[in-house]
Image (tube, rainbow, N blue to C red; front, side, top):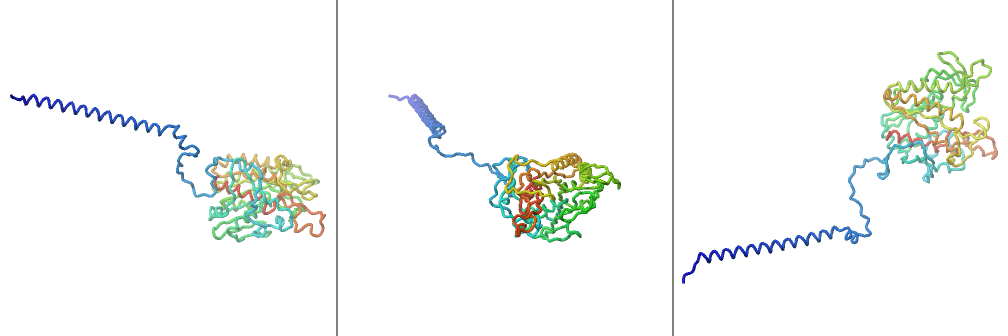
Length: 432
């Protein structure tokens, strides 16, 4: 018998091909089944129902996004929207921590404003702070302020309210370094202090009218003659120092209510309260408009490269009279909203101030002069409790509990509400 080897070989070859094909099909089916089950398991893991069942009760949040936080203690918390706000509109809120200095820690407080030393018995007025609406106001940071003011010169220019303010600022800064008085004029009304470690100077320049004036008045405000006021000549006491200053706060106000003879072009043009002088009664508004127009024009066209603040005049809280006729200010707590209205005279002064500032602001911007407004009217109007009142004098009732004494309802106790001006000013200097 002969065997057909060729035929057997072919049959064997076909048999192997069939087996290989079947094996491939089985492997393919198994792989597909495995993938299908794996996909099904993944779908279950991604199921919202499963996720909810497994993590119920956990507070899941998106991963934090890294941010660069500036090293600045005056920045607002990140969860507060930092929009520009009105620092001058707000209210007074309780401040249990109280003031940052005391009459014992600060040697710069003038006797008339040293209310605690003078025997004021109610300390409650010290425990309030200014809280602007819809924004956060950082407290004054003396360390940072002095660092920012290295090799700089400040001046507060104006009347006794400016002196009141400079003493507040010195008290707050002296917690870091005690300044040295390096200059005073003959009457000790214009002074300058130096902070040696920072080469920083603060001046208080006495210029109650901002224009040239001959004043015949004692330290208690008693006049022996009308003020001779030159409405078209700025006072060189401040203009001569102007270009050497990096920062300044210019203000005036109440002095224009005094009896005065007005001069223009070295000629008497009229007066305010001058019976029997045979002069035209022009009124204080005329003089105030003229003066502020010249002051603002000088500033707006000066090409000054520093920062210049114009501060509006401050409200007083005399009741049942004024300075020399028995006016008092007996309140011991801040006034509630709407409880006190600004007096007519204060309103007139402020109206003139805002009008002249607005006219000068555009001109200043055109000349690249950085002129800003400080309008503390609302901040102080609600603080009738912040004045010395009868405690302008030392222990006024020590000998007679019912003594009739002069009250000061214009200036501010130190420490007191005026300290919060510095919070606002620093915020404007730091953050514009």
